[in-house]
Length: 520
Image 1 (tube, rainbow, N blue to C red):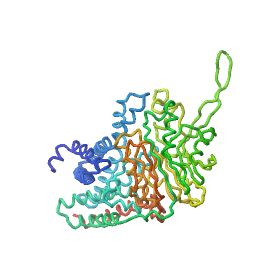
Image 2: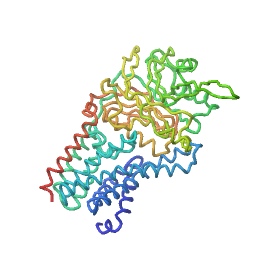
Image 3: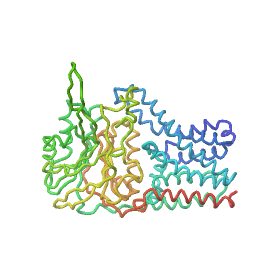
Image 4: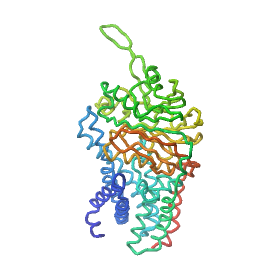
């Protein structure tokens, strides 16, 4: 093996990265990911200089993201303003950028290892785990961030993911590096340090597999999650608007004596609810006494623009911008609260540097003539009380927002649950299952149940320990009718957020320095 790594280190790094992505959904081959990370550790240990250390990490990341993000190419099949083949190029271009972050992690670890503990594998391993944690956090925040598929997601099938309640998702990524390092140490018959790493991981796995959220209490508020199976190619068809509404109405069912919370997907209806009372009346007619509808629909803003024509001037009203919103609709057709999506998708919901990129023709990447505007950030909306249902608070994270660890709730106004309406119809077969996995991690981190409603799947009810209690698979119409799962007390991560993974980073770096004299 060492001879192979020395002959073709770049190819080995690229292939290892490509195979490492099989540990995520839908394949869930997490042992393969750990083996590939072990190979990466060997490659970085043997790197002769800084350039090689960065290049090998970057190539690993290139292979990793190219396979793991293949679903992005599928989105371009619904964008008629751009050639569909461009989607495959977009995956590679994005991966070329995202690969910089594992490259920075391997470069930093190589430099720290050479500076503080040259030739000593255990301190290097600890430095690499710390640097990987830092690089994943940086990937989640730099240039608005792209936190999709953090390494810690691979732990979901094992129970080790329970550690996210303390060290968060980025800390889980560091644990994956440590586990891979234990494999390297065991291959060198260094049983004591390998066991010192493996034993806590096994303990975490048992804790996670045995840990259960409280059962849904008797008398819990009744919820119905609607999945209409409306594909992206039909969603904005004016001819099908009435048929789509009838589907949503039928799946919502008839009112019952007990009040219900009805959950519809992101952008479920084409109406501007604050401007169209007829639409509010249509929605209210579906609700019984005490029911509430939580639905996605845009909030739009207009402006007056001066025009010139035939030598004279005039003004007209044009669309200035919009919010991607979730509205609360009551049985008397009121709109007591609204949440506006804060973490928008660049090139999907808005065009960065529009004044520069629009003249180049790149405005075709963004549907419509105006950008979405961001909301103020995590908020808890108050759901009015009804007979049989107390007043409660609901957090909302629309679609992509749910992937950002530590950024999903208002900590000063903790909700009883999170609603994650989404539109995953763009994202083929790999994207929706990866999205669901990341929502499960948010539930674990925060100790809160999460309700997901999507047009084509995967809609789900997730408990406060990240278990999927009920779900609707892809490309089927249906509903989930159940009680609202109970929340847990705030976890350590829910209280302190990403300060805890940062503390773990410092512990790892401190251990690396402390063990340099005892390592061989």
